[in-house]
Amino acid sequence: MTQKKTNKRILSDHKKVGKKLIPPLLSLIGESDFSYVKKGIPQIIWLSLLIEKLGLKKGTELAVDFAKIIDELEIKKDVPYYISWFTDINKTDEKLIKDKLRLYNVYDKINIALSDLLNVYPDCLLNKIFESKKFDNSNIETIKKLLISLYNKQSKEATFSLANTVNLMGVCGKLQMTKETEIRDFNNIIDYPETDDSKMIASFVRATTNLMLSDQIIENSNEWVSYFWNRGLELEPCEI
Image 1 (tube, rainbow, N blue to C red):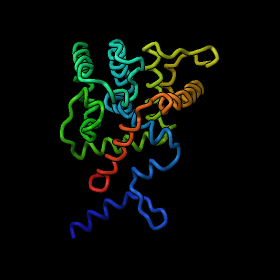
Image 2: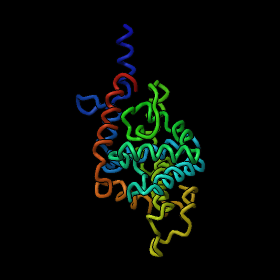
Image 3: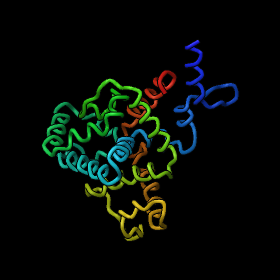
Image 4: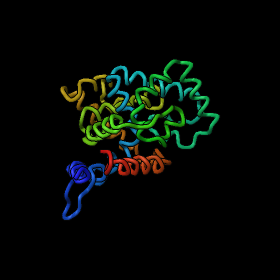
């Protein structure tokens, strides 16, 4: 009797396609903007989580500190705005990054803010740097809500997270605006979607990140992306 009630609660979130019941996470992967949903979200979810936990201003500041500290170590030419950046770093680099983050007093702040992601995804590449604990239902619920908000690429959550990928490239000196972009002040994205200027910046951000989050730029994305969605599907039938 108890088991039957549990199954009913779980299946209530599924989407019916013909005679099949599709789990919510799987239905997200297979619909709409394939490149962004399947490959973009797993790369930027850490940025979204920082904003969710700390607010847009403090979350962005912490992300900037993180990216600049690592970029200045010159381990790679690429800016670490995407999680797959950490795929092939060695133990020496891991220790170097940890020590620098601790030196600048940002290690614990980031570790705590990202705890939901780190706990739910123990093999997350960021766990090479940070520490995770056994996940609980609150961790899963946080990630689930975050995924739902990020799925709509034009939502505030997705727009601000994508904007931060561009912002991190800019503050690390790897992306320069040309006169042709017609963006007067990138910080005006904070007004999205209330002003025409913020909407124009958001449009620029989406177009730019279509390339920044693609396989053309992130060559080693498959390992993390596959694990991210497979882990979600592994947990969904019994937890989400």
